Image 1 (tube, rainbow, N blue to C red):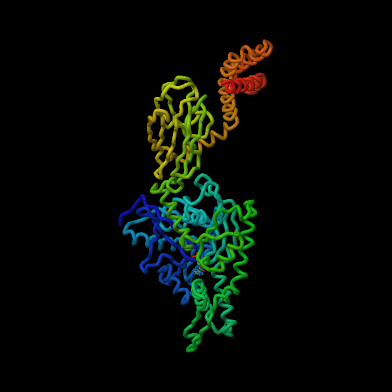
Image 2: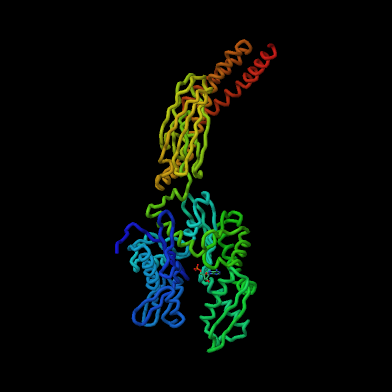
Length: 578
Ligand code: AMP
């Protein structure tokens, strides 16, 4: 058999069921066994002659040889005590490795190729020992374990990053066969952070089955002794699953007590009454997780349901009541974790870039403006495709061309950001501030940035295409963000200083021109005062002291207040004289 060395499979090693999948032809695909089933019951049966059965075959053995068979071994992960199963003495991780070997075979048969690398999911609450045991189980099964991934993170990945904005907060409510957990995650620059997690490792669909079985015993007035409790529980589970789709069913136990058949009708209302107290127990955990994350239900953007038991309408209703919000059931709840594991595998394989998932600009994009400042046009974390533009004007009178430098980064000064490109546009010479150059940034769905620069007077335009605006390594983005944080204060001061200088540069010639225009109307004392303030401002511009510069700007502003009023009066008078 060939080994497809680059292929990584995604595995949901579940308490009740396990799944395996691959990313193929642009889609995550879960692989079916020979019987066409994608769910493998996480059950292992050790036969006397050394044969090990996994999945449905083991499930059948469970009725015949319960002493040789183990289900829900995930609950015991991390525990080194040997389990005695018939003649076999095995650790929980060895049992798990049998499930993983079985999944590996399913994949190899489906692909007709060997697989050796895997991503395996574990509950968010698994500690280091439990994660290490899961990793060892993978290795025992012949896998190189590329990543141990938290189940809620996998579910969130499957839900789709593209549907979430940065800093989105989501709750993943996972009620499976044997366990319940609720995790609150926050999407932070493409990475899910687990804010809090709470749960009950002894609460799940199995407990519902037991409660239903007891209800059925009472209803049929049969005693526990008369009945094979495992068969009754299996029947209860089937009835429960049917009642997610129909209003009533009949639980049939053929050949119960030799020749007698047992038939018990069961309605959804009866089922819900029996199950409600158990499902209500999840409420406290949800509230605790919210409190730990310091959030209100209204702060959550999405509630994602995971685990087979969330197919029950009652579970959905209770969750919606807890979070005061509609839940999200867009994925098959029992496949979401596996699909997420496959997506994580595809990310590691490089078949899927974080960017395709993310669809946002990792860093701000803009251009350099007067004084060497960064002028942001598309802020970071904007969802793509996107378009934005701004109008710029000439800094110097009679300028013949304008150079547009395209920048990327979070720093205030142009020189500290990355230069992506440069384009020069010739334009009709005009007095300072009169020319109009439009700059438009457009990023398409493939992440390609097009910069269009147009002189609005002549209509002349230029287009620059930049391909690497979106695909930046995570490290580079992190380094830029770290830099911008580290220099946040000095950057801000530098921007304010530059802006103050620009203001002074504009103000000085304007004041000079007003003095000339109003020469005959101003008394000497006032002229002297204004000239002195101008000179002081000019001197302050040569220094790097922001507070002195601001002081002088203010002084000149105060001293020239009267000039502005006089100029306006003069213009009005001229108009009325005409
Ligand atoms: P999981 O551990 O996620 O595979 O979930 C297994 C649990 O989901 C078992 O307790 C199943 O009985 C339960 N389950 C699966 N399908 C349904 C359904 N349609 N309605 C209610 N429970 C279901």
